[in-house]
Image (cartoon, rainbow, N blue to C red; front, side, top):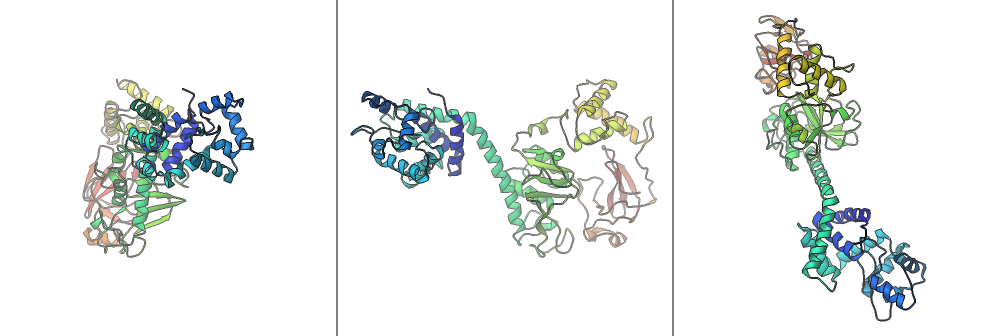
Length: 520
């Protein structure tokens, strides 16, 4: 077997896919063309033709024969009938009959290119399939197996003298080899891209359809809120994040990471949007989520016509309840990109390691730093680099753990326990977290502070009408408290992450969250 013109096959594959063929259909066709043209070379003259010409004193190679055709030394009639009364094949498909070879000749002259021009021959091949071999093309566009596609090309398009089982199997094997070495990977890329485009298109189409607005009372349709819209978009695209348990901003990230997404926060510039790609998920785990449209735009479910999260009329009453807008740094805490699972296996690990990025890394860094293990000049930047690796190993060694640099269940349990002991004031060092006293009055230090039904982000936020009369006077119509609002502390709860939750007459608020004071 001659060497295979693999690069030409890859170029042809992309054109066949663009023409509507399935991967199996394209590969079945390529296997046949490879066999016909002795390795997928568009300048191939049938060997029998070269031998018979040599017998009459006309000595050619594939190259010199092609050059003679291009220069006119070999006329159109001689190209069609190299020897009186005899027909021989030429090109990728080994076109043989005078009528088919004449079409190839005419197209080359029309375009002013060589008779062996690869692009021209592929164009002619597709033209033949569309105009004269529709039944073959139909199979190539629906084929689910390479053998099915290969057989139809062999028996209904190429039609050589021998179409026996050994020939059928051999040509299908050529197509399978190409699929395994190249098309399989391209198929994966194509499927991922299709799902990405499907998800973002669903968001854009829904935003442009005023029968869909914003409201948390009908958040799974016909109206949506920011998280349900994004979750539904990917579910509709065939990525089962809703089925697998994503319900709101607070639990989206882990579910998405286990279903084909990668956290690429460290790879983009959130301030400018540089590095973002169409369909990227822009996530703030506490407050909001949107999707990037490309060209400096994002799409999101925003707020109902009342300026609240509940009680709106169905549909988009303002044109801005569900909208496409210019990109903004909300600020986002995470950017998630769908990769189809190529990097999603990292989410299945039960440990962090050098090279990882994201919020979980940052949380670990904060605790290490709090306990005196420096993570370098960048501090808690969410990037598990050399300095963080050394800090973790030092911590592991000091606490009788295997110093392998893997932040797994044992290391995490030890680090959290020691950190909580210190920050709660029960350890050897005094706590740096604020101290709150039941019965005292405090002031909110941030704007848009949510009042929740319980102590944690897994509890839903309360509506404006569910707040106390006093709280309603100091809250936005969304139910979120304004900065500077005085609140009475009725109860305090600390969670395992070192956050402090405060119960006020209207419900629970974050008093100290991720090392930031929300109440002072």
